[in-house]
Length: 76
Length: 530
Figure 1 (cartoon, each protein chain N blue to C red):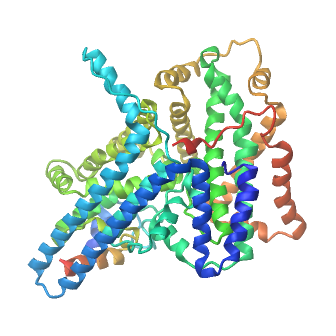
Figure 2 (cartoon, chains in turn purple, red):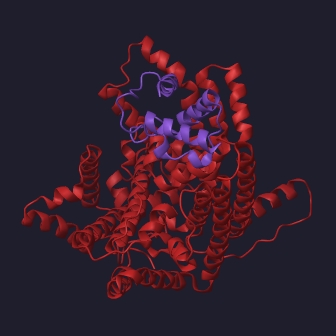
Figure 3 (cartoon, rainbow over the protein chains, first blue to last red):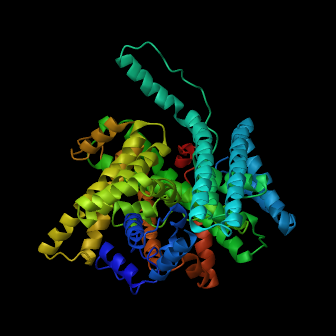
């Protein structure tokens, strides 16, 4: 989870990801940032995040991003 | 049948409500299907066959995709990781072929009915320039009602089934209802099966509060359309039709009033649609969230025609940017550029498809393509210049969170949107440029603005007073909603006399001051033609 938070903070420096309850609703992550995040996660965890995983509920918190990564790792 | 017509509001909607609540709760969707088919057939007659065919294609396609997905789920437990990956890749490929075929068929129908003559004319012009004698014939085709809206919903449905977002519908007629549900068929919102499909499936008992909310929303929609949008139509039409005669203030007013007209027209229609659905206990997605509070054009498009923007994001932007080639391109960019540009540049290419698509979706004319690309250019410039702008602000100690800065951003966005609306409304792009230029020339006409407004648009000072009052009202309503308040709940909390006054005054105003009857050039809903 710490790695994910670090990635998020490099993508959008200054944004308060730690205290946000919903990155999408609060516009911390928009489509361009999601693209960047997907690329970074693919590299970091050696996974392939495909379209079915691109849904708001997978990007609303560090925990939901972590769960998505775990799900992909198990699925692959 | 227009949503603001007497025929729709009383015999049709009233009859549909009676029929719906007379049917046992489990079968109520059949009542809605009957009303929706009646609405469609009254408008289109035998062209209903087109939407029946589209439904059949996506029905079969989605069922097949789901069968493949089920096979994968059953088999994957017995396989090791490599075999599982291989099988998944095979199934994904098969699903992609099916989706591609459905896109060819359904966008093909949309292309032939909406765009064939546009492309034909342009190709013929090219032939002429190249001295080629071949000619593409002009097809006299009638555009099926709602085709631009239901085609997008149809494609989103099969894609969502493939992505596992929703289940394939087993009943053809339920799927048909999802596509032709009468409140959404004319102007949307562009619905997703996961949302509207489930709403249509659910059992809805009569709920007095929901019913009242629905009726209120219809009245508010009528207020926006009949009292405000249609009121300014005659002035806007007069100036745009003879734009070469005017300059300065009358042109500025025409542009501003057109923006107001389009917003009130489209939002009014959507409110009537959402209110109509709510009378049956069905919630539709929101299509507007106070767009003129936006601080950038990106934000404007997240607040204006939300369901169209979301469709392009989910079914064009992400599939392109997450495709294998773009991912490789993105990796290359990261090797050669700084982090910001490496992330931004691949997205910029994908955004081109989004904004070209958004433009041409609105109509088969060059001005609509330019309209989409106008927003594309603004967004791309904004993205490319962002790092320079951040450093500029930091050097000058400009606080980007200050309220003056926020106001400046709102005003800047408003001006940019108005230029976009000018392109949208003008006859062609040349007219838009001429009119934009004439804004900076003083008005030398003989009549003053009030005389002009009256002579050209049949508008009195009282009409402008009503418009100004409505803009102020909209601003305060918007401000309350921005702060998280529900206006309808706030009204409900008022004492009875105030509450009823709030309900009755708009109805009385619509009846006595609505822009209908002799002397008014009532406009069709603008987005209905798309």
